[in-house]
Image (cartoon, rainbow, N blue to C red):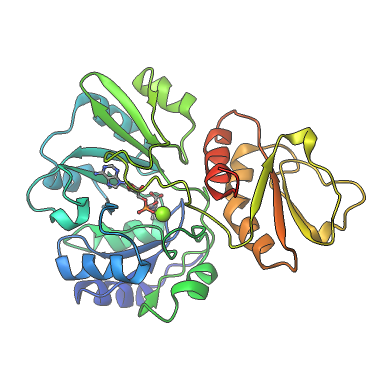
Length: 318
Ligand code: TXA
Ligand code: MG
């Protein structure tokens, strides 16, 4: 996608005025505002209908800038940053006072990330403040992976959507924090655990706590479509009731079911491709004339862990 100065300038002007702009990232679209401006941050919560106890991630374009916002940057965190930034990695680090409490919901850590999207990196480089940006969906619904998704749900509530095409990764960033010598994964996301462990050594997975103040946003009802979604093991899924059911499948179509009711995440079984398609296909199934969605677990390798995490949170049988 060609980057035109005009689009970036329009986005920049709104952000400087304290208004919100939807931004493309490599993971999902974000609903962005000046993280240092409390009024802008407050309107993020309002537009998303998000509870104030659920803190936001701040986005910037360089490690030098990150250091202006955090009071400590442990060696292990630096190693992860060197390997995975720009990219789908969010680090929880002790915050400096310049970051409003509203951003962190009163926690003493701030979530920071350098995203990998050329248009957004240009925008961030031109700004003197970081962007607070949750996913650009109403609270609890599926995250948007293209500008059209954002427009459908928030189009009338924000002045501008910066269109950077389809999100390459398709699921949110992996969130990592540090406790003593432990490296803790609080949200499974766009980085495979194997890749993280190659850089940082063994990690502890703590992704499911809906009541844990460390990751207050990890509510089980996240990422839900409007139709009930039922999750099954791969070989248990059958094509009965096909008129009323939409199917989200890993790598092959079901025999005897009209293909218009089926979405296959990756015909070659490629986890990156599957993650890339996940949210867009869930949305498509949600708009079909069916009453329920049946999905199957994907294999637990690479991004499969994060995909299954999202499917479980989207499912009606939690
Ligand atoms: O890929 C992403 O991370 C996308 C794009 C836009 O960058 N953003 C995103 O933001 O997914 P959001 O707000 O939908 O999810 C942020 C998550 C929430 O679950 C929140 O609870 C957690 O990050 N979080 C933020 N700050 C935190 C903190 N200080 N401690 C623990 N969890 C935190
Ligand atoms: Mg979100």
